[in-house]
Image (cartoon, rainbow over all chains, first blue to last red; front, side, top):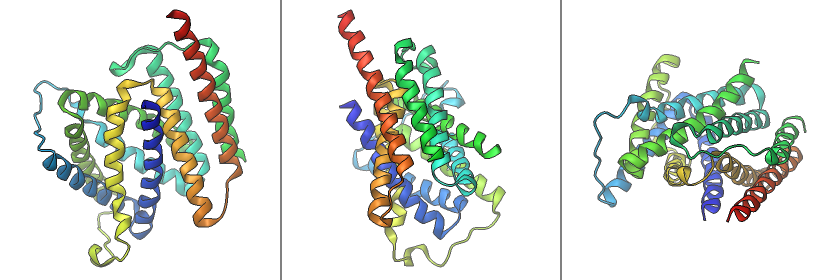
Length: 140
Length: 149
């Protein structure tokens, strides 16, 4: 079930990127980013109202806990910048590389409250397959 | 080289944002966390817009644009985030990364194939290898789990 949801969110992401790409062509990447976030904000507000959810902020929550939205904007701008210079495939492959390496480190040490999942040397074969996939995406 | 580095960093920020936001979701609720994320996102992207463009280019009234569907990306993004908040604490960060990537890549290939009638061989083979790596390591995990049980 979890695996299915993960793949489903990848499918949705692909649709989102296609739609946002059209929007960025109509405007520019900075204006598009504002529009995308406004539409998103409107959608989540409607979802909160429909489900009659309440928002309670807890005191003493560190500011970093609220930083994900800002990180998301940085992601969008960095990818837009590199797409204009490197095309589609290379940023995609390099982005997967960055995601994989940071994920392995986070899993191994159990950082940011994630469950600790030490890297097993038997998994080096799978990792080599992944890395070769990343390289082939960049060169072929 | 600069663009190579920011491409890799954008991968790191995706993972960090996903975990930080799911932690917030655990504290204040999934949709509430998503709401906060979009508030921060609107403010940050507004600041970037002011700094880097200092003008807003609206080609006419957005509501008069006939392709209204291009505005739905933001809504789809919210769905992705609600799913991500739910699933992030429930599986290894690497497997989540790989599965999302595989779903994204092969959908992208299908879209390209049906809209532009082209198939990127490199992305197809690369994607298959990434999937093979994921499958292999999942089997290693499964065997280890069975051995300990």
